[in-house]
Length: 263
Image 1 (cartoon, rainbow, N blue to C red):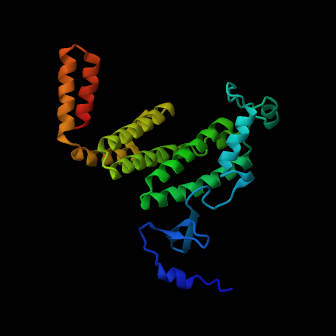
Image 2: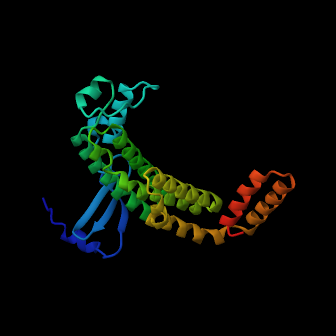
Image 3: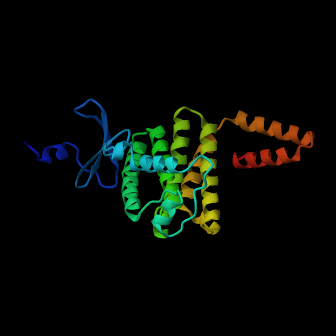
């Protein structure tokens, strides 16, 4: 069997500084994502787990562990506290993740990271939202169920980036459908989620220096001029009506929105 990739790689040369991505049709007729790397080509499934595997018969390891947790905990049962010993927690009916479980889940999350970066280049924004939302669930799962403290926090530092990418994809999807106001709301919600993260992790000052926050603010600034003037005019009329009816709480909200819109 001829296995030399030289001809294939030469047909699609690597370009430094660029993310080269393409969508191809596999031999079975289903789509695959390919990413050109300096030393070869990375290929991923579009749906399900990027490598096409189904661990324990589930779409992903995350789905498997979530299913196990759901089976062990009733709908009203608390997640439980970390006792430090796997046996004690299992006996208490709390599903725990061993260091090996956590390692495998982190490796799986890396696959989804590679795919949502590629999907962003392909402008499949809905799929980016799907994969980033999925990795946020994984960060939460580790926080709540890992035995070791280092595993619970091992992906927490990635949360701001994932939040930013998800907000960016939501906004881009809205812009693609000429829904500028929806895009603006998605960006604002992303910024608020980042602000909440930094507050909850006792580093509120980091919000003002966050590259993820700046990315969303820059996207917001580029979007503001695209909003129709009529929208600002309508908001000013609502503000005047709120003041006239002495609804000062609504007036304050509308004034803040106008300020954010540059009005």
